[in-house]
Image (cartoon, rainbow, N blue to C red; front, side, top):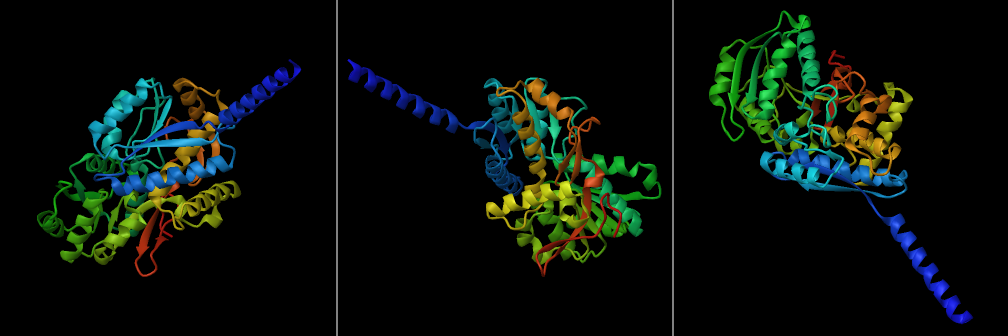
Length: 390
C-alpha cells in the first residue's frame, strides 16, 4: 500500500510538473493584419518583418506576463472587403486589440467598425482618428509628413507647386492634407498651379505631366505609394522634367528603390522618419530605443531597416507595454485608457505623447526629408526634424 501511494504521488507530481511547464510555455497571442499580397504587398512585407523582429525582441526581454508573445498576422491582400471580414472575426472572438491593417484603403474600411468593442492600432499613417476614440494610427501622420515636405520646399524657394496624386484612398488623403497645409499662414505665398490625378492601374501619365510642364510649376508634390510611384518616376524621367519632386514616406523602401533606381528622377525628395537622421544628436533614451530597433531588425536579416519596418515599431511596443502592465486578460477600455495616458516615453522618432488627442504620439518634429543615394544605396538626410533644410 505504501509502495502504491508512493507511485501515485510520483505520478501526480510528474503530471503537475508537465502541466506547469506546458502552462509556462503557453503563448500570449496578439493579433495583427497586414497587406502581404496585392497592391500594398511591399508595405505589408516590411511591416510583417518588423512584427517578427519585435516578437523576438519582446520575448528576449520577458514576453508578456511571463509568457512568450506570439503575433498572429493575417493577410488582407490589400482588399478592403477582406480586411473588414478579418476585423469582424477578431471582434467576434473578443480580441481586445488588433495591430493593423497596414495600408490606407483597408484601414479606412475597418475604421467605422471600431467603436468601443476593440482597440484598433492602424499601421497606415494616413488614418486620422478622432481624439479619445478607440482607433490609433502609427507613426507620423501623413499631414505632418506633408507639412515637413512643404516646409522644406518653401524654405528652398519653390513656391509654385503642381500636385500629382492617384484617385485611390492614398491619393485622396494626399489631396486633403496638401490643401490643409498650404492653407496655413506659414505658406501664404505658396500656390498650387496645377492639380493632376491618375488611376493606380494607369501605366502612362504623359498628358498629366504635359499639363504640369505647361503650368509653370517650380516643384511637384506626388502623394502616391507603391506601383503608382514607379509610374510617376518613369513618367517624370521620360518627360525630361527636372524640377524638384517630393513624395511620401511610404516609398522610403530599399526594396522599392532596387526596382526604380534606374529611372529615379534626379531631383526626387522623400518625407521620412526621424530615426533615419543624425541619431547622435538624439537624447540617450531615444538612442537606446533606436539601437534596440536596429539590433532587432539585424536579428531577422535586415541590416538596413527603412520606413516600412519603422512605422509599426513604436505602435507594437506601446501595445505590448500596455499588455504588460494591465491584467492578463484586459478589456479594450483598459488598453485604450492606458495608451491615452502615455507621455514622455522614448520611441525611435522621439518622445511619445498620447495625452494631446493625436491618437499617434508624435507630430511633425518626428519627420525629416531625405534623398536616395543610388551609388551607395543609402538614404541621405537633407533636413532637420520638421523639414527645415540643413
